Image 1 (cartoon, rainbow, N blue to C red):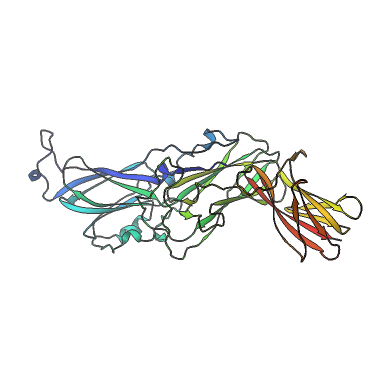
Image 2: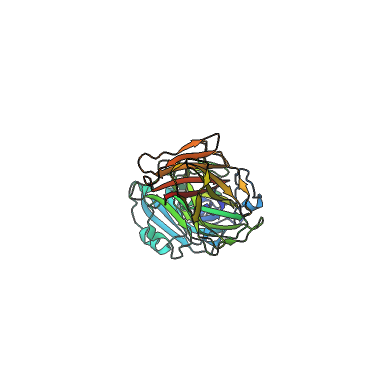
Length: 455
């Protein structure tokens, strides 16, 4: 699988930039002298802008073309829909301005501030404007350590689709000179996760759930870390995000798309869905140290099944608040199956194997040794040569014996020359043995259960 991992630049980073200008200009077109200006103040004009789309880094992938891997168009809720900027002097709020544009790339802020004074500015976008204005009222004193504030979910806009943003600029001075420039980058607090699905199988498919883990569900810091924020066009951020230790936990994030059905044998149709998550760290929060994704997939009229995806990617150990990540997924035609051969005192005989959803049942009428062969078969009956798991994450296909619920004394061993697992079923002694196998084909991983049952 290719993971397209890009900084969420056009959708994640907005720039608050502009210049401070004198409040009046002489008749000759030259800047007025300080004595001609409004005493003690300077007119300040800011521009709120979104950055242009940065180039995305990606690795080659089969079955997808470059246009199919392109980032989806920007949605309105990913643009600037409202903003609030609080100006701070001596740790107190001395000015507060806001605006409510409608899904724009650029907007302007105009105000006057006393010259010769140092300020900090706190900027927020796509939030509940009235709530933030009530918190940053004029004269409010900021507590020390404000950079460690946790984002308050009550700040979310009534339009819950809007992606909240924040940023700050510290210790700048309004000098009242011409072409005085300032910039505040407001960074979106969510990462954008997108998945694309293509169906190359001979059955129509329906995706009912896409899941990602481990995802952090607790509070996040209100402000970004500018010195550690990933730069555009990088495969891997240099630093892990900073996660508050405030009672949050890591778990599975499930996205349930609507109308996600793809026709059979469709080499051109690609369907996408997207969602947004908190920044998260896989290292130490998942046994693999990486993120894990899975689908709930239904082929035609068959029963839905959970299918994992191979995602052993060193570049995706953590997700930052302004990341953009695309998972391109290809659904193949192969499905797992088992063949069981029973070896009673004379000869070898196939054991009847039946399947119910993802469970297989092999019923023995005799005791003795047996062989298990695991295969992948397509809808035309063709069998895919599949190799045993070699302990690496680079195999494009494999079958792996995961474990079992074993009665005492039962053992299952792999025989490389034959490519089979061998065991001994003692009739009446081991009435029911449950075995777990994992199949990989391309990037799909299927987990199957094989029950050995005595009549």
